[in-house]
Length: 309
Image (cartoon, rainbow, N blue to C red; front, side, top):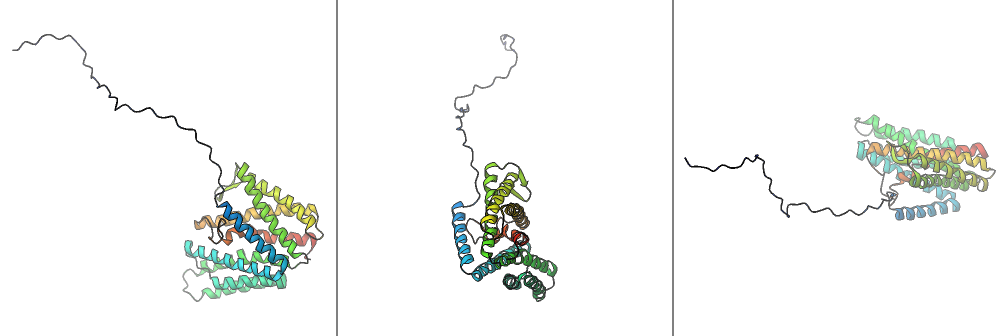
C-alpha cells in the first residue's frame, strides 16, 4: 500500500469562491426626488373654455334678440340629446328606444310649453308616450317592454324637463329668468369644481362619481347662493336677495343630483361621456345633466316668489 503522509486535522468547511469584481452588483445611484403630481382637470381645458364661450354667445344672443329663436335652440338641444341617449342605450344595452317619435314629440313639448304653458306640455308628453308605444309595435315583440320603458323615460328625462326653460321664457322678464337659471347652474358647477379641485378630500358619492367631494358641494352651495342673491336683487322684477339665497341653495342641490344621476346612467352603460360633439365637454347630454333637473326647480320657485309674470 502506498504510504500517505499524515495531514493535520482541519474541519470540513465548504469554501465559497471569491466573488469577482464583475459579479458584484453596482451601487445604486441616488434617485432624484419626484415632484408632486398636479391635479388634472381630466379634459382639454382650452377646448372646454372655447366651446363654453361659443355656446354662451349663441345662447345669450338668441335669448335677448328673439324669444322664438331661443325656443328653437332648446328644441335642437333636446333632439341632439335624445339622439345621444338612445344611441348609447342601443350600443351598450341593446335597448332600441324609438328615436323618431321621441325627437318629434320632444320638439313639440318645448313648443307646446312655450305656447300653451304647463297644460300644453303635459298633453305633448302624453301624446309622445303614446307615439313611442305605437311606433315600437312595427317591430318584433322581443324587447318591447324594455324599449318602450326606455323611450318613455327618455321623453321625461330630456324634453319634458327642458320644457320648463321654455315656460320661464313666457314671462315679461322671461329672458332674465332664463339667464338667472343658466347663471346659477353654471356658477354652482364652477364652485363645486373650483373648491373640490383645491380642497376636496372627502368623497361625496364615490361609487357613482369619484371626483365629487363634500367640499365641492359646499363650494357649489356657497357660490350659487351668492349668485342667487345678486340675480334676484338686480335681474328679476319684484325679487329680493333672501329669495335668491333659497333659489341658489335649491339650484346647488338639484344640479348636483342631476350630475350624479347622469353619472349613474353612464356607469351603468360603461361609458365616460354620452357623446363627442363638444370638444372638452363630451356630448350635449354631458352639458345638460345639471341643467335639466334644475329647470323645473327654478321655474317653480320663481312662480312662487314673484308670480308667473
